[in-house]
Image 1 (cartoon, helix red, strand yellow):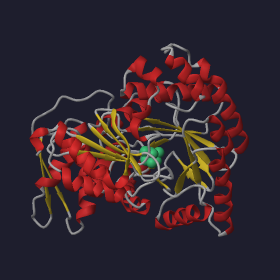
Image 2 (cartoon, rainbow, N blue to C red; image 1 turned 90 degrees about the vertical axis):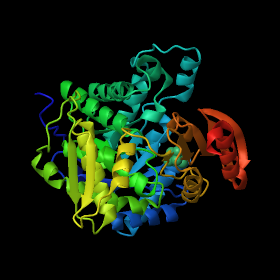
Image 3 (cartoon, rainbow, N blue to C red; image 1 turned 90 degrees about the horizontal axis):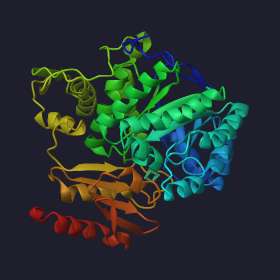
Image 4 (cartoon, rainbow, N blue to C red; image 1 turned 180 degrees about the vertical axis):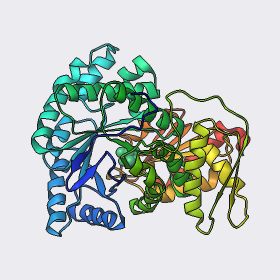
Amino acid sequence: MTDLDPYISRVLQIGKLSLGGTEPVRIQSMTNTNTMDADATARQVIELYEAGCEIVRITARNVREAGNLGVIRASLENKGFDIPLVADIHFNPRVAEEAACIVHKIRINPGNYLDRQFFLAKEREHQHDFAPGDIREGITRLTDICREHGTIIRVGVNHGSLSERIMFQHGNTAKGMVASAMEFLEICRDNNFHNLVVSMKSSYVPTMVRANLDIVTEMKLKGMDYPVHLGVTEAGEGEDGRIRSAAGIGPLLAMGIGDTIRVSLTEDPVAEIPVAQKLRDHYADIRRLKKPSMPWTSEGKVRVPDLIKLTYPDHDYEEMAIIAAAEMSSLILKAQGNNYHISGDSGRLYPKLVLNILQATGVLITDTEYISCPTCGRTTFDIQTVLKEVKQHTRGLKNVKIAVMGCIVNGPGEMADADYGYVGAGKGKVTLYYEGKVIIKDIPEKDALKELLDLIDKTLPDRS
Ligand code: SF4
């Protein structure tokens, strides 16, 4: 087998749904309600399902929330909705073990999954060399429970939350992401547990694509065929969020990689579904025939300077922007072309769209870069309004990255490379970060935007 062969994953059963192989790409999203509010969460799951979402993820921060997933599932089933549910777990293996008995799939993050005290103690002492064998026991306990209940595990690596140990060994890189996932996958395989999905997410499109290509290469080398879930984290909102998501997910679908997708937007999660559907539908033939549009290799190609003109129907601008971002990103990532024109079949040219795609793919930065989380049950402020206000006041800052994140638990890790961070720190409170460090803690939310703008003015004097 060479890496030019298409990657054909095994087929898994999630509730009544099959995923993987040549099954259609499954569309996922995540609720942003409080998981303890079973009615509101079940209502949002149904809204998502009715919009076309096929698999819904719900955060479970603690054992109580994990237990409440049972109430949510029962409420859905009582209303006649048998929708595959996924529990999103960070930090606490007990929560994963509880949720694994209730929902169809659990997502764990290898960067923070195992006993926190164990990791912290080791990492505090800068013992970065403990072996994967040290995490074997915890994973085995989980695979035993999942086997008993037919639960899928998604090994969901996030570029923003690799463990200190992995970063020490491999850096905060796509290579580190692959190492982190492979440790878990190999232990699961040793346990003869194969009900696995893998995901490699980053807010930076080239890293997200690289990590996915590398994990597929690695899995092929090791004889693994686990389905792959795709998504660009903290993609933002509006056109920026759609373009960034399409620029990451599209090239991989074009290469026949990706069995489920989530377009993660800082908006109502229902808004994610049509974007994901457009991407899925655009690449449906590649999926069905398993014939990648262009062969892919794990090495880059030599850039050949040439002008590439792309033309699309432009009666629906949003659809055009999504497909153009996916296709132009494919060309960029394969180093094909160095000058791009996008026009509509109306004859109109779209130079701003070209610039936005170049920015999303990290090729040419001409505007402020924003990252913002899609929100979940942990978010305690109106992030959509705040993000719009932040954007309104800070456009045009080249090479400046501003993060607006819903919570202090995962936000700081996931925005690690942002210059400025506006992070929810509990009800009505915000903490501001500059260059990865806390600058002002627990500011009342009503003052936080002004404080952020003052901080930007102080640290970027040319802006004022
Ligand atoms: S940063 Fe926090 S609030 Fe935002 S999606 Fe991640 S866990 Fe949820």
